[in-house]
Length: 64
Ligand SMILES: [Zn+2]
Image 1 (cartoon, rainbow, N blue to C red):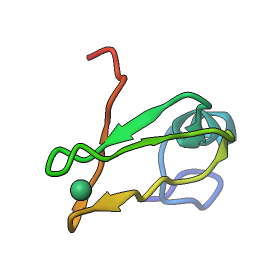
Image 2: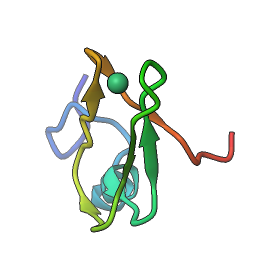
Image 3: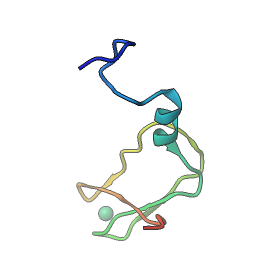
Image 4: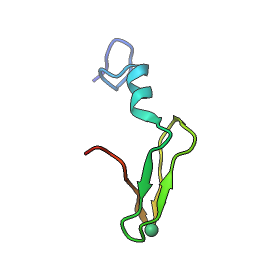
């Protein structure tokens, strides 16, 4: 299925993508296995792919 822009991603404009991919300073990610903690010290836009002990790290300070 294609929209009028010829893109296959529906209902997502650039701002939506930026919002979804923004990495916030202060965000923390932890490893449940060894309790390693990683803190983001520089924000940006992109995809964080943090792994530890062979597993993806989990967001540690999420409100949920
Ligand atoms: Zn670990």
